[in-house]
Length: 489
Image (cartoon, rainbow, N blue to C red):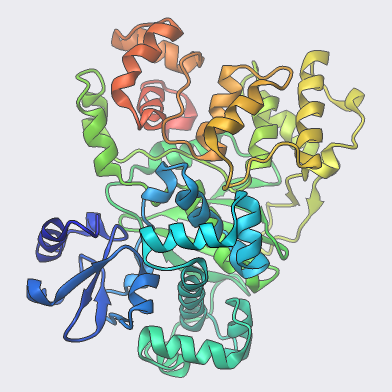
């Protein structure tokens, strides 16, 4: 979008927050870059230039605006609605792969050379993988400076910087303030209720309907791993350097997030995975406008706009749970998963109580005795085949996976039909166009609304909803009185 100068100027002049994260405005006279909704008086059009990423602005010598905080904009929805190389690379960078494995590690995961990756990212985002990871480190550093009492040395290494000097130079260059000055600008706060917890706000593009989003996560919560408490969804997180606990609560203009981490180097990854689970980088206006073109869906959208797709923080975990949920009720699936957690999950300490384990890793599940599984023999075969493929690395469900190829691979596994493959594509892989025409809830909704009831006919009708069929699923599910559609009391 940043190449459409006229459209960008209109968005800036109208202070339209819907475009935050889509592009950034750099002001040639002040050498500052802002989000489109910056509250200050817009500059003259001839003094504006537009960039596709904060990293591109920083690389061009612009510093972040102190009023609108462009580093805290929602992420671009492009990276969650596309499956091409650039989108997959951006999802991996957000997951901290460059900080942990370098650009060669990023390229190896994607199956391309480092030169190809750098060329593609530069062409589309105006910055290479190192610059994009650097911008992310700067954002993490600012968050730690403003929300924790950690020393600057601790913050530098927790944010992923290789030295304190690099940390200081980067913060000064990006924010035009030293780390100490950034901390001095923050009002003094009382200590958090939970010792060691980080409290932050996760932004999103309005509107956001939390009912089905948090309702689904709470209604399907696995005991010991997830819970709904005091108006917040809480769950344990398996992270690259350790583990964590996230508490997420909906607010009118943000998601309140509280993170407790065993290793602060996991902060960026934890935030990225929470945002992905709640689908916070979606563009609800674009989605809802497309779905409203169907006269059957239009009333559903108008009644409760802004529905998101509830996703996951762990793709392998969700795949296992999808198999456990085949042809059984939500309660039965939770029971099966809870037994696995108790027997094979890794214990964790929860300062607030309630959460006890991490969900078992595929490696732990691959060595269990199938006879201990209280399920039909055919489903045992499906389960053991899946966890073996995940543990061996033969099946990759990570953020870098190709949606079409992975779905095709899933369908080759015994016991995997279209419903299981598509629900994994929708909620684990993040495909916004995944569709569930064979789902019982979808077929009931179709019958009630006068839509075609057979899978083939319904799929043909749903072609008009593309590329947002996963969101159409949320609106169709919402016609039922199932607990997944309601925010817990």
